[in-house]
Length: 256
Image (cartoon, rainbow, N blue to C red; front, side, top):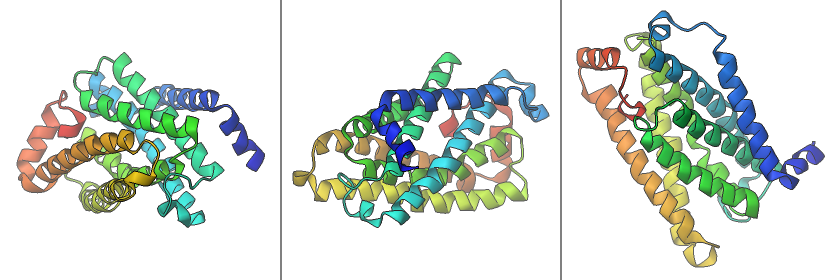
């Protein structure tokens, strides 16, 4: 197993490409599966359903995977620059392949304007992860950043349920509160911990400014998303949420 993981280290570009192609293959496979009727009738909704389904698979793999990496090597919390494991490195390669594939999918599908904020986010993540992959520094930091995928499991599920017009279901209601809790714990918590760590250890880290700028931009984005989440799921009346989200197919992901 160790030898297999080492191969990914020796051929990082090939590794990223392989994972990107695997996620793209999953996207194409989803075209063969039936869609909910309310989704299948709309081209944009159909694309979003497949895109979100691939994102959900990525989150299910990398979120728990990141937790396992830190559980098996707890010093990742104390040394985000130098702490390293082969499994953690592989996880960063997997995630890099996904984000590259997802950015390409958004562009190829003609959704760049509606999803420009996601393209900015993906550019920040990809640049940070590529630095990690090619320098072997900040592997632990990248894995901690992948804690956000624990929340993304419920965030993507929420959007899929809304696409299926199931926002009045009990499942959506439960997911809404779990999504809120995991957003605070895994997305805000992990992001702010990494930001604090870099600020506190700024003078002892390599290229801290590069990561700090990326983190500050992402922190701003996740706070805006958090406000939009609260506004949509908790501050609007149920009736207005159904009308807004059930009729406008061109809303951006972040407005949903």
